[in-house]
Length: 447
Ligand SMILES: *[C@@H]1O[C@H](CO)[C@@H](O)[C@H](O)[C@H]1NC(C)=O
Ligand SMILES: *[C@@H]1O[C@H](CO)[C@@H](O)[C@H](O)[C@H]1NC(C)=O
Ligand SMILES: *[C@@H]1O[C@H](CO)[C@@H](O)[C@H](O)[C@H]1NC(C)=O
Ligand SMILES: *[C@@H]1O[C@H](CO)[C@@H](O)[C@H](O)[C@H]1NC(C)=O
Image (cartoon, rainbow, N blue to C red; front, side, top):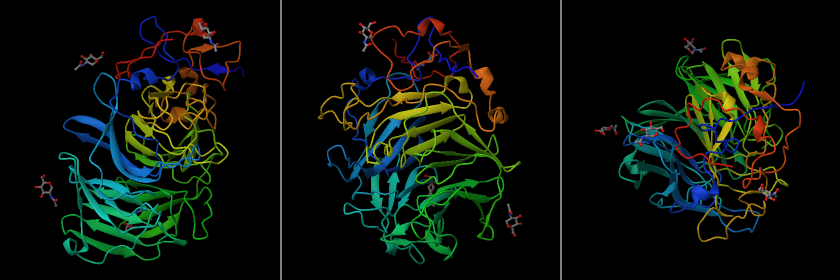
């Protein structure tokens, strides 16, 4: 078929840069910008009526200059409301927390984080409580918590089962891959071991399905530190029994440090990122039919893993992470992207483009030449939407792909270079304005 170009929305008659909501110029208005980082923990939390994506600590080390390390700096990025969106620095944590500690909000107001790696990349058993309203960190000590204490670990995962309960599985300590599972009960202020041999796994995607009261698990690495294949596990949290689920279709394979969410409105699972071997597609798993769908929305962000992400359906956000696929080096970043299931025709939208090589005001400005770890590749590397796999499967979740397309181009648009932001695009005249119902972000970049 001819190449389809997904046309991005624009305000009135002014065409916008494909997929870009805020530019580096907008970012310059912000007071500060974090260094790019990966293996932070965090998520989307609502604080005093505003929605933010929070990120706690992480590792800023980059192969660009071999500087950085596991940090104790914490940030949030406002998602709701109008005006320029900025990263805001929060109170430092009492210690550096890297390698995917887990951040779970319980009882609405406090984030609970267990484990993670320290500045020398050793696994810890720290248990932190961060107050969203007061921006205060507190360490929870074994003397304040009943029951046994989970061993030190990083790259494990937790899910929230209720406002007072979170469940933790796996992780790694040195060369040991853990298979135990723990329940934290805030009301009893107690940890309890719920299984010592559930599944040897770390860097896995794990999400709670309240409809079935099960946890779904995909990807990650096994006891030999090799990536799992396409397995999907269903873990019953009544019995703590785990089983493999037979699935059909082009599912994700060998993902690690990826995003995992259960989408209640679709009764489906979402997985994204965590490999160089795919095309940054969204993987949706239809639970009722046990079938996979891979959706290639336009303007897919550059490949990465170990990012933070958040689902606020119909919007899915991702921020930061490690641009792993450039010579398999470590290139941390501080961008923010969003995909709106209610407006899939817009493709992914970049809400924040980093302004600095390492994402902080004191560093050399990133000049758009793709030097430096701010942008080893175009951040919006994938310009075009593609057929979903299997063809048409996306229509089970949103508008079918054919309805996303507002024009067909005769010329193949370039897919490897950045748009020339100082002039009119060659294919600009082909663009047709479409409704931009979801553009709540106020600022749209002009060509
Ligand atoms: C935010 O922007 C929307 C859309 O332009 C507008 O309707 C709304 O009044 C604005 N809100 C504020 C608080 O400025
Ligand atoms: C839950 O939050 C309420 C209101 O802030 C507080 O009074 C209560 O102590 C909290 N419960 C627990 C178990 O932390
Ligand atoms: C989980 O286990 C309980 C108790 O055996 C059972 O009733 C329930 O059907 C199981 N859930 C699933 C989704 O298999
Ligand atoms: C970008 O567009 C401007 C204005 O059309 C033009 O002067 C400039 O040469 C273009 N730059 C590149 C790199 O194509």
